[in-house]
Length: 82
Image 1 (cartoon, rainbow, N blue to C red):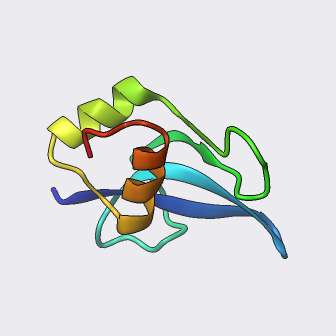
Image 2: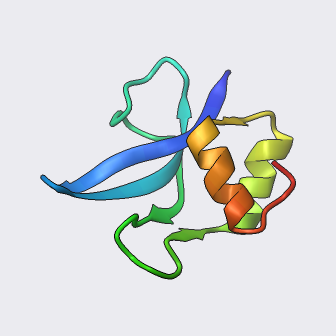
Image 3: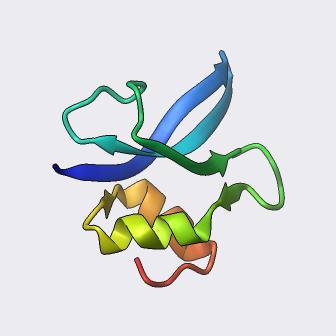
């Protein structure tokens, strides 16, 4: 099964809030995820990204591919294994 680590948009209009999820590549952006790994709030000044690092490492070892946006967020959060 091909999976991706990507963002799922939640929140209200004009106030975006995202969940970092593992999802099958054939599902829609807001489809049912396999697992929720964390959250990303672009409005906050500090700690915009909160993720379970052990689960992210697990999914990366299983072959999950992060989207370019998620990869850059993880890199900024000092998760340089991506």
